[in-house]
Image 1: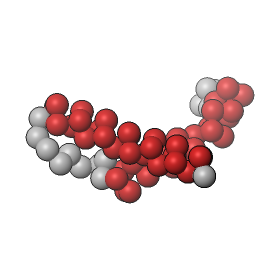
Image 2: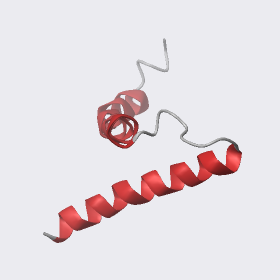
Image 3: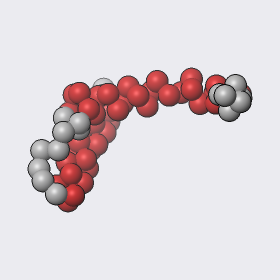
Length: 64
């Protein structure tokens, strides 16, 4: 409880919504919540491709 009352926690809590919005886009918009292939390598590849796609979308949006 003392940590939650600190100024550091309150500052970081204000920034959290940005991270949560990006996580939600990955999960709901790009299927990052369910593995589409089996094995650790498959999940690593899915994660890399999903993050690459989201970053590419952001780059294209910023260049317009």
